[in-house]
Image (cartoon, rainbow, N blue to C red; front, side, top):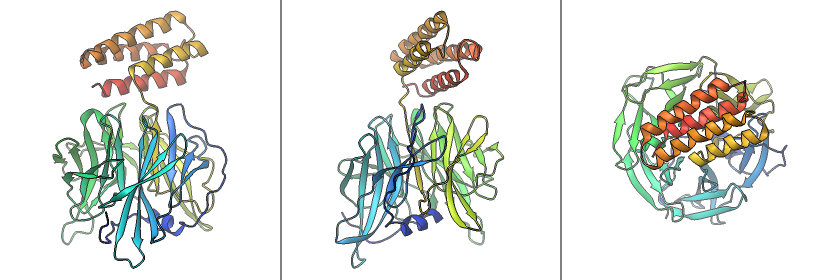
Length: 410
């Protein structure tokens, strides 16, 4: 279904993406997925896999051009369905006489790289997010004002209204599955005041009810929710641009890292490793290029990839396809660690499995508090044996997975 041409104001990176529509896919150095999942990035022509240790790109899938009767394509939003192994983005294009705008949901299979184009939608969705717990795709529409939060049917493209959003500019969406809530920062303006007023809004996925925090002392542009710890993080306005924790109820902000994160619109959370990945836009005397950087939200340590993105490739969106963490998967990880020697004591491995079996049984019976207590005891056991009978890397992984299961009990 077509809608009259109207566009949301996009960030600086959009300009570069649109200018690069004609760039062809290039064969880059092979990418490696982390133990916790795979990082993807997108510009105006393609989806790439990104090595999370070096920042090297591998061309993964070409984005489909619009029909011959349409032109000026752009691709906005990138969301991951880790269970279904799908990425979602929205293609917008215009009729040749500029009278009509078209919006189509694009689905990319992350295993085969197959790309499919959905039916026309009434509105675009520059921001997308997928909630694996409810198997629902959400989008923020591109018509102001107000912007709207909608649920999007991935097959039909049908958009179901959830809520009208306050403000004149919304950030990306940060999902809190255990709370069935979607967090965004929302900007509004007061007459005569140059700086926007920024608040955090929380939208109930089911009812559409919105709660709004008091105005933030420091404005933020990107949000990420660590599902392992139940913490909302934000990247502040520059300059400098730093990582903050934000209380979505009170609006209280705490500095998580003082390192300047610079500019860059890509932002993706891996809750299993507690790493937030982002693009870093670098301007120097020779021009403009991008790098991958990431910050550990627990330690505040910032790392930068050793490989620059190839010339002419500028990524506007990032999405992380995490490995699903379940009571069975954490037991499998303990058994795998025991088999590889990362857990070198058979009695310890047996004791850990016993704890996980008890916690899983409590979850199955809906006893989340009991399960949380058992998982906490599991964390204490692993932590006590870290560096002795459990390798440091395995201990960090198992603790993070147990924290996720505590924070996301049905």
